Amino acid sequence: MTSLKAVWGNYPSDPVDFKRGMPWYLVTSIDISPDGKKAISGHVTPGEGHLESGVMKLWNVDIGKEIYTFHGHSRAVNSVALSPCSSKAVSASTDGTIRLWDVLKAGKFDC
Image (spheres, rainbow, N blue to C red):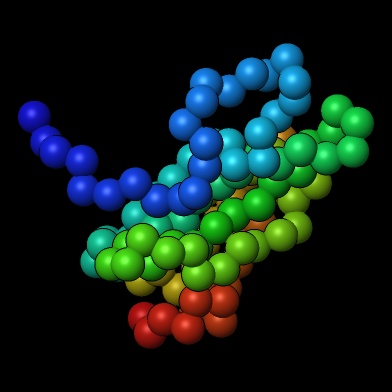
């Protein structure tokens, strides 16, 4: 059995009531860099009406802080991955697209 190392984010701990709509903070996927210094998370965010959009967030694992938010998907992001060097990230969305992102520019990390 392992112990919890950290909890990131500033989100309510109440159960999600999906009847009232999708919460903006819903995490759908996550990947961590091989060196353990970066993490990338996929999210679904509410849109107008019943439409939803998606974002991807880059995290600094050492301090547990969000570094950057990638916008571009028009629907939920349901899969994310970092390249072996963590210089690039890829995301897949229910909008039918796969997007390639430049993590080095966004996160000011070295490869």
